[in-house]
Structures are given as structure tokens and as C-alpha cells.
Image (cartoon, rainbow, N blue to C red; front, side):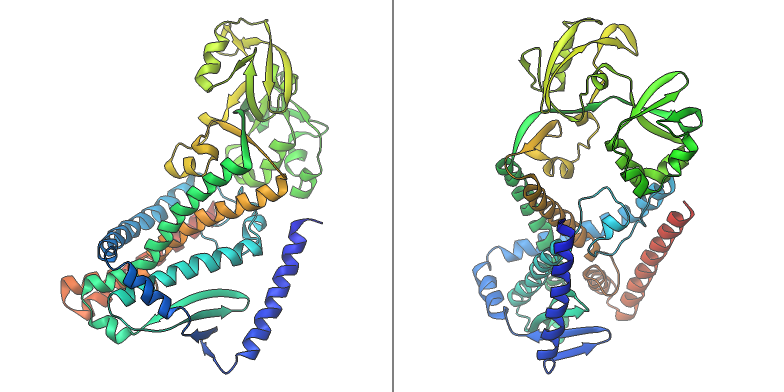
Length: 464
């Protein structure tokens, strides 16, 4: 039985638990709109203790939180505007803004790890508690009473909250107010970095390096120039449903302009994710008829070439200088050993050609990409030390923890009325203008601008 079935059972059990919890605590549950709030005093004393223990570093941390908060406010606005242009250029299966709900990546066929309900409930609990706890610690540090803590329920979906005394908060200096508003986002940012480091430790413990990552060479082929794909013509093949594509379990030969290409299960699995891009560009990437593909060298890691342990991609280039087209060489990969006759390089027939692409050259070199890559190296291919399914379950959980920690931090800094970013903007405007009316107008204008950007983003996506 796939884990999805267990996950659905856990979701159903959780819904039943929430129903009986709300029923048993109905005298303590307060309804505000469509959300049910359960208020308690749990954690307040702990917040007070932490605030006292960290009193020497919290003033400096407060300044850092404020500066980072406004930096992220600018950053998220920039990312939203940039997304409009990216959406216009690159067709997407999913809308650019999606709710943080279980199974959404699977539903929209996004090239992301599965997002199970178990992941969702763990991540929401961790991120929400960390976020709200930080608000409470900074409230205590700045002598603002925390009236209550608790959870909000929207059906089976949860949200944590810390409720400071708003009247006391309003009387505090702007810097102290903004410290409290920025604290949640700051804590999510810090924990996102911590989860990155834990992810790297997980890679070291659960995986082992298995060569330099590669895949067989691919090339773009115009769909209009394809004669056939296996037993299909091009039109028939691209009309196949996602389910029909998933049932193809063999490598198909493709002919175009008197040249041979191939499409295997791995490339076929990518079609549902990139169908809109394929339709817009009217081309598809296929494996070339290369020496590597002919001998069955699939994706994996190259460990040795002719007995020399491969150090990096440059080392491979140096080794290949010793050989010529037609020479036979031995290559050991993570999947086995292959004897291969070198071909002629498409760009220079005097140079040897294996017909592979090193994935490190295709992967992003951004800091985020590196720290979510095994061993901080985008060149490496790795294999699990233990059970693959168990390893992938915890790896994907950590990846989601990292991603959502940063996304929640950015989202909360949007200058919108009901978010921390909106409250920070209002406080800054009030400090500069000394007028609540003008400050409310500034926040209102900012909120409307964000709404316009989001609507424009969605319209561009729908048109695309």
C-alpha cells in the first residue's frame, strides 16, 4: 500500500480528533467569523523565562529583525513583480500563488516532492509555534502583556496565535512595536537556516557519494519535424493523457530529419509538468543517439573512467584529452560498469564524444540551491545508505521545512493590513508622518497595490 493511503487515514483520524476536541472544549471555544479560537495561558510563563535569559541579545536581535523585515518586504514585492514577467514567458501548469494545503503539488503536477498531510501538520505546528512564540518573547521583553496563547481552527486546518495586549503595545515606542511585529518572521528565517543545516547533516548520515552526477545528452527537437515516436505519430503522442503516458514503460525511438533520438520513462514523466512549455515552444528535449545512451548509461554518477576516480567535471575533461574517436574505454558508474566506443564530437569531429551532460552545470549555483543539495555540492550523485523510501520520506519533510520556513517569512512581510508586514509599514508611516489617518492611507495604498500585482499575476497566468 502506498503511503498516500496511510496519509489519508491519518487525515481522517485527525479530522475526527478535531471534531471531538472542539465539542469537548466548546465552552472555551470562541468563534470569530469562520474561525474557531481556543485560548489558553499555556507557554506564557516559558516565554517570560526565555525573554529574561536572552535579555542581553534581544535588543540587538530586535534591530536585526526589523532591518531584515523591511528587506524581506522589498524582496517579496520584487519577487511578485518578477513572477508576473516569468509567468508571461514560461507557461505554468499551476497558478503562481497556491494555498499551503496537502496534496496541492501533486494535484497540479508540480515538479516538487509530494506534500502529504503528515508533512503539513508537522510543518504548520513547527512554523506556527516558532513564529508566534517569538512574538510572545519579544512582547515580554518589551513589557507588553501577553493575554493568551492558543490555536485557531478552520475545519481540520490549524493556526497558532499569541495575543498581546494591544493597548499596551500601541503605547510603546515604534522601535519596540516593530521588534514585536518582525519577531515571528525573524524566527522563521533563523529556523529555515537551522533546517538547512539539519538537512545537510541528514544527507551525510543517510546518503553516500556515488560519483559525479550525469545524464545522457539531450537536444531540442521541433515537434513539427518528428516523423514518429515509437508506434505513434507526433500528434497522437502529445494527445495522450497523463495516465496513458505513465503506462508507457519502455524506451521509444524517435525519428526526425533522418536522425534518431530516444525518449525513455524519465523523460516521459516530465511531459505532464512541462506540457504547456512544450506546446508554446513547439519542441521537446530528447536523448540523442549517443555512445552513452547506446550502451545503457542512464542517469546516475560516474565514479571512474579507465580506472581513474573522477574528482569533478574538469577532471573528466582532462582524462578525455588522452583519447580519440573510436577508442574503447571503461566507465564505472553508480549503476554498473560500461565499455563504450567513443564517438565524434558534434562540434569537432577530431574530439572524442561520450554523449553525457554533467548535471552540476545545469543545476542552480544559488546559495539556497547549494545548501539544499547533498554535501553542498551540485556535482555529486548520491545513493541511500538504508531503506530508500524511509530516507526519501524524511528528506522531503526537511526540504519542505526549509522551503516553507522561508516562504512563510516572506509572505508575512507583505505590506498588507492583516499581516506583520502591514503593521510594520503602518508603524513606520506613523513615525514619519505623526498622523494615523495618513498612515492608514499609506497602508491602504500598499495593500491595494499588492492586490493589483496578485490579480495581474493571475491574469497573466490564465492568458498564458
